[in-house]
Image (tube, rainbow, N blue to C red; front, side, top):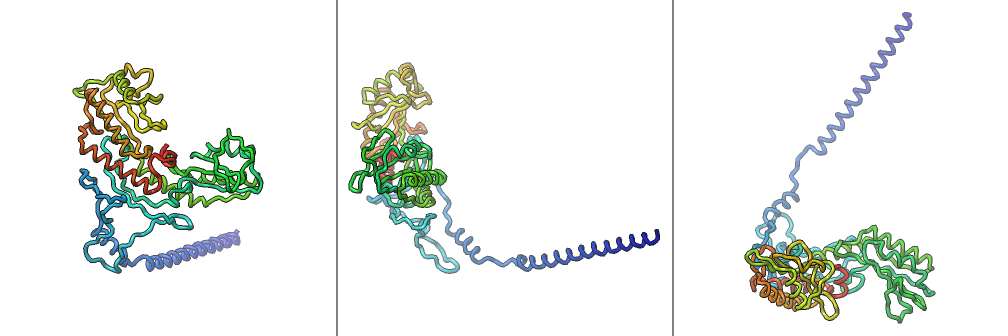
Length: 421
């Protein structure tokens, strides 16, 4: 028993020595790491670049301001460019360090090649009086789109070429999937290199087939830009189809297409404005739906199923609309018994060509309604709308449509109607 006790004591002593050794080793390691960290991060040197940046920001920063009147609107040259200089070009007071040249830094896109389109100077627009949208001003810088005035500027286009004709029957699957990518898809075909392009639909029956196809996926609409996932799925479908028909396929870069979609959506957001002119009753009296309908139909409006009267041109395109100032729509079955304290004329700026003339026509009819209903023309704040206010709206409408034209997306054109639906 004595021998066993000595053995136990020895094992305990050895265990204690080992534990103490481990503790000592850990303490030495922590001390060494702490010393290294203090040497690396301990001294607090002044960051000269940070100091210069903070100083520059204090001297040059301009707080955003909300204009209180239309008199602050920048003067526009005939080509649509503002005569005001950007705030970055004027710097007051000396600065430390190297002098920064007042050059404009180009907008970089996440793609291999830079866009070559010229930058469009965009006017700052005040909120339109009576605007029916929550868009109060066009203030964001508008980046140039690649290849403006071309189909590639609004579509992701896949090219498919085949040595033998591709029949419509072979395209049944891809045509049926045109609603699977969250944005409109069009397929165009060319029967020969000299032939014109024609749209291919499920109802079309091609006799000779196509040797050249284009699959066009729209990059943006009023719901926003296309997603990279949808772009990838569309590309994969086209590649599988090309393999099935033994054709060559050319699919543009997905990241470049998505970057174009973002820029296109930003531009569309800037110009997507609707003008609203309100006519309200005086002294809390009401307008009857029966009288409104008679005036509307006499003036050339036709009531739509969605509850709006539409004024159309000779091609049946909507120029402007007439709706209820109150929430209840003008439904065909109840408009005659409806009463309301106001009506609203609506003009969708991107959707009509020659907006200045259309706006003048709408104002003329609004004046007729005002006189016959015994109402008053007001803005969204129920403030009477003067002649100067109407002129201001017209000027801003012209500026928006000029901006669209400068981007080769004219208001009321085929491309604009595709984007703003």
